[in-house]
Amino acid sequence: MPHDHPGKREQKHSPQIAANTQPSSALKVINMERAVIGAILIEANAFPAVVGFLEADHFQVEAHKHIYRVAKELYSRGDPIDFHTILLELKRVEKLKQVGGGAYLAELTERVASRHHVEYHARAIVEVASRQELIRQGHAIIDGAQDMSRGTFTILDEAQQGILGISANFVSQQEFSIASVYRACFEEIDERAKKGGVCGVSTGFRALDSLTGGWKPQEMSIVAGRPGMGKSALIQYFALQAAVQQGVPVAFFSLEMGKLAIGKRLMSACSGVSHKKLVNEVLSKEEYKQAFEGTKKSSQAKLFIEDRPNLSLLEFRSVCRRLKFKHNIQIAFVDYLQLLRDGEVGHNHGTREQQVGAISRGLKAVANTLEISVIVAAQLSRACETRGGDRRPQLSDLRESGSLEQDADQVIFLYRDEYYGYTEDAEGGDTHGRADIILSKQRDGPTGKVKVLYDAETTSFQDSSETF
Image 1 (tube, helix red, strand yellow):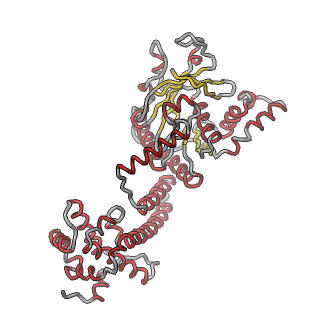
Image 2 (cartoon, rainbow, N blue to C red):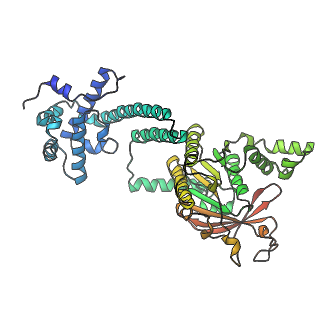
Image 3 (cartoon, rainbow, N blue to C red):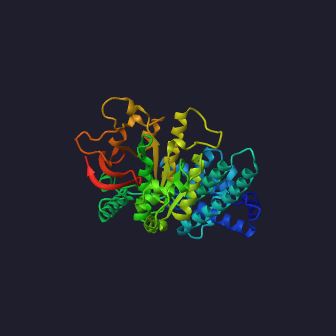
């Protein structure tokens, strides 16, 4: 079969390589692309070996992009992929002339040194494309940083997403057979047995763990209650249990209280020294020593506190990414949801319900993307106080957005009879120092109620291991 002059063809099909790429490197990339396309043309198993991670846009040469797209179209239709089917398909879509004709296809088949190395060459092509995209992202970051009309955190968020996108693209996509899924299920079951029924991070309440299995990656949980009910103290307890008792790296976002206020609450909970004394009074030598000794263990914990006011969803996502990369955080706590903004300052859009819905979806996306648990405190509406009879909260009491119930994997309510001045509960029991944790929604498990102990003096909780 006659061939075009190789020199002309090489010039015609030269890729667009970045200015700082050496000519020898460009030729090496072209040869790898030719090897992959040639293998696809003559080897039936070549395309299935690379289709999971190699895309047409990874190729530098336009002709190779067209040929690969045609092969992928044939593959999606279930048609065979070989020299003749690709040639006919290129004719049908009127791309044959653009790729150099049948002569160029034939030449590609002659350039295959070993069809068994197709996957190695394909991964090298993806790596080169990833480097080119990194260069493009770098220029985009510089351009964005110089545009003073745009918000800083919007630019940072776009930069982080762009780089993470390159990383995700570089990692090959895995296909999971049902056998491999079953293996993963049994591994989780075995791990849960080792940890006494907990497959995630323990909540610190044994009865609640038996219902939920603990905090699990990629899940968002809402912890809701009326103002003053103790929901901030509850998620602080959850954070201490994870970071101090289990050594799990934790991020804690406080949108209402500053670092010192959070510190005094945690100090009181860890040491048993009255929170009121830590805030307003001079400690005795004994109390000072008690506080110091009580915080020794927790001071070694990987518990990172962020108290930035007016925190936006973009800033939250940015900080979580940084802490995930630097400290491998497993859980992020937010106190509380209604104080989060969905955009830059002055750029919230839509009704408040739409804004809360956007924040809720964004929090769930962070949990999914970073593979962490996100636990968010939320305010309840006054509906539970205005209706007669039982004032225990319901899902309909979630304030400002039905999206919270929809997006959350778990919805947990905190309720204390003592809050409303009741000295006895419905069963006639003493309400002093008692709290109910009500699991009203769980996407992948049962619901239920747990009784725990609450100490108002130290704003702390203790496990009583009672369900009802």
